[in-house]
Image (tube, rainbow, N blue to C red; front, side):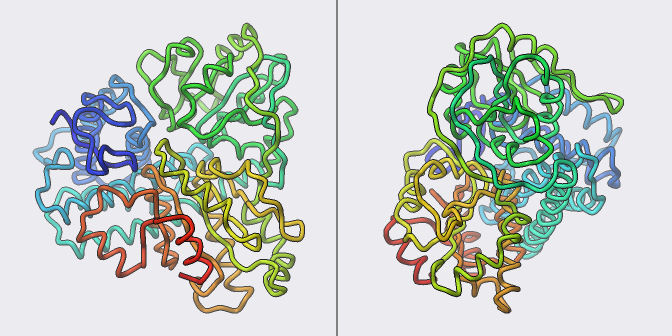
Length: 512
């Protein structure tokens, strides 16, 4: 085999990509990512954590998240930087997933590694907004160093559970960073049509990139559109105040091959979710931050506290025709924990009156596989007295369906990006308190989660750390879970795979 990677949900045959990644990653890129992670382990093993090293580790791990970066030169540069930080040492670390022969130990090591990658992504978003936590960096070093040692399964399970606690801390930190910078999300109607002016399409997750682009383009005669996970930018007061933040164009990340072509203007990829770039838009797509793609223009990072320079993408936008329409409607969102808890009395009254029988959390990731139609079918066929709580791009499977409302409460409550799954946990824990329950699992709440990449792994571990049990996970259980490790998760936390929509709906409505 030329490579081995099974970190995402679409990995070949749900066992592993061995020639090239289903994501579009070439073998050389996959092997460079393995080499970079090896060097991060050596750095953690040989040095104490500090903020410089911690920030380098989270940036490097973020680059290896699925569909984040395909640029071999960037990985080679980070490998060189890691070796520079390490200095002269005889320490070594295992290289690649298959360096461990025991499938259960290998599975636990990779579960921990992917949890770290997800935590790193959220920690980097928070750090960009000036929020860092030394405990997060300390755990990164502890866990990466542990991955160089022959630890028994129980020790690795302990680290995986600890990673869940660190994920909670990191997501809370990012929530505070986002709301402290941009205000609490508000209920907002977002247009899905297009205007008559040229536009820039912004995808990914980085809200500071969006803020700086909006500021620099305020008088340029162009409009700014969101795509994929950037949709929740419309919910924040400090971003929605810009009148040229026009609307949302298109759907989830995997449809960019066609949607980027029809947009006509430049595209800015701020983080992960870039797919192999097509010739139809290669001359007008830009990357920035941890995102990268060979042959695509990359906008430099901030220096000396100054904003990024978006003048090149703004200038290009002025020369482009307006977007080609895809649809003409609206999406309602902005149901973060602050907004939903403001409606708590109304929600509780609806539950006590029997108008709301159950909450179903359908957060997570979207993807290409046909089996993901399951989530559309579940949403469309849930009883009318259920509320769907969502976050992440999984919502594109059902957020444009006409599912109505319950006493003025929309049946789909979108909390935002994948990191805003923290909001859903806060909402559930608050409802537990309001109803006087001693266990969050006694709420009339079910979890039917879609996963794709490593940030979803961090969210899963966070939910387990917060005490949630009985989650459904689909459209497949992770290929990196060995039968032995999957058995532990099933027996300890009640995790189960999705099956058939009707059967799962019936089970959830009966509390199973």
